[in-house]
Image 1 (cartoon, rainbow, N blue to C red):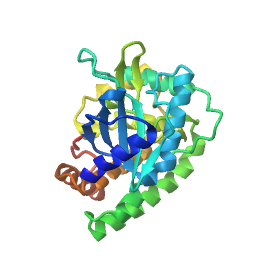
Image 2: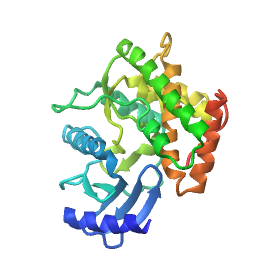
Image 3: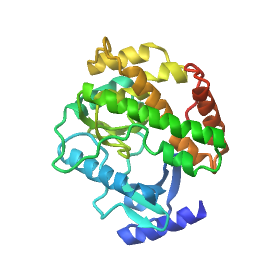
Length: 289
């Protein structure tokens, strides 16, 4: 963590920003720091994600300019890379009156996003399982059996997605759409954050975090009904939902694989999720970090 903080100071200097009093807010897929003097947050991750983060910054800025409630990146040249770390900078939104987003807020924003015209610049196609296979290959915490199974499973799911995608509509897809990625805004209601996985793909891909909550996280089954009613989605005849759910489950491992190197809780949850998938257990309870 010390080298990460030192890299953050170097990056802030390059961007012309002050990092005095920087405070760690969260560590999972990214390390997120509050920069109080800039009223901003810095998101730190591995420099290998440069192209994805450049797309995230460009797309979020364009959507915000178009009037879509996306969290704005700061108007500085970014992403900024120092050594093995990459940093992006975003507007900081503090909690407001304890407000919490629900699935109807998320459904409304996703409906608007999926109907939004594509941007006037290239937007990558979504990568169904993301970096999961690469993260598995580089991991020092997985056994050889776990690594081999997961890499093969990623390949199977990618092939299934290639067959499924042409049967579905395409649009802007957020890629990690859940209520924790909504923040209250003093004038815009709720804004959608964390654009790291944005791309072009089937809208149903964005439904999966809510679709899986009853199955994996103990939420009431009414949650999925509330979401699809608010969105206006009829699942009847949509045979791709189960495949997309399996893809989302495997993709969720990526952040835990990276986090397991330094976080015992992430390592424990990685073992829980991966062992259930390898056993074909579709109902074992998972836990969010």
